Image (cartoon, rainbow, N blue to C red; front, side, top):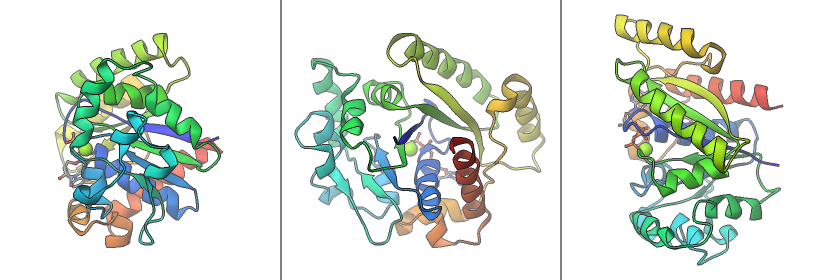
Length: 254
Ligand SMILES: Nc1ncnc2c1ncn2[C@@H]1O[C@H](COP(=O)(O)OP(=O)(O)OP(=O)(O)O)[C@@H](O)[C@H]1O
Ligand SMILES: [Mg+2]
């Protein structure tokens, strides 16, 4: 059975998409069969994988509204070590359509079940809000990976995210676990980063990934070339960090 990881944090710009794309690529590099699902209407993960949002024929939108088989919406590319279920602005409309639909929270879970046996990992990039798209991801997932910057307000946002997770666990997905908190854009020279990181360790200890993602310009440049950082600059500190994260996750999973 695939391990399904939702990459979520309602705070914007914390590295969800960068983590989703580069974790998918790094797990692919470890010869795992990986599907990356872009559940954000911004479609940043889609673009970051070199897929043109405007020409995508079948996307998460069609899958959630059951207008196609999940299998039909999977995009393969010779350039990538993983497959992609893409998104674009249409997906914002799916939210509205879902409001009146049956099983509206579990559409994605159902779609992924139909793909069973084809993947070792499914990585879901969530939008920066707690909407029906994120709920679909949390219902489908086995675990949640939370990227966060070590900044003052990060800890505050974290407690509201933990409350939401608890609600999902208590209602629709009791099996959901916290895969881990991932420190992103980490700057070891900054005192604030170190302080927040220490607080994080004291509150969440074993639930904080050992791997830290450094601030690295290569990670920010790679999406404009439509490539994961591993292909853009394999030797960069960003590429090495995401490989280490993939190994850390894969080591715990086996
Ligand atoms: N480790 C890093 N080092 C340098 N830049 C980074 C790093 N991680 C992410 N970035 C850059 O920071 C910005 C936000 O990252 P990203 O898009 O991954 O965040 P997000 O949480 O998905 O945002 P949103 O909430 O809008 O979906 C992007 O421009 C990205 O290239
Ligand atoms: Mg994003």
